[in-house]
Image (cartoon, rainbow, N blue to C red; front, side, top):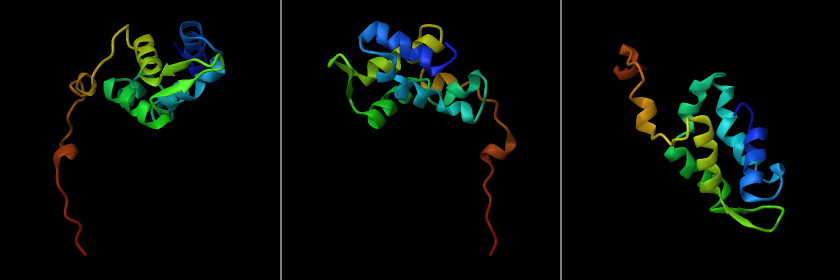
Length: 112
């Protein structure tokens, strides 16, 4: 999927309601494109912890326009699976591919 609206359309097909019921959640997952405009933006929210964070941001469920309560976790799982080849990676799955640089582990004392 390339745009939050298409994820939202898939959510409406899967859970009922209309895409507008879901677009805020899908926008949240893809807001990290502001930082990195290619697939690497997904490392920030497209994982199991990101799905639980979405639940903290949007609540345990949303009520769609059909009056049906839909778990936010299910919506997040759908989004991540659509973008990550049908799986839900962990944060560790993303970070184990991070290439360490010397500056990442150096302390620094700021002198007054």
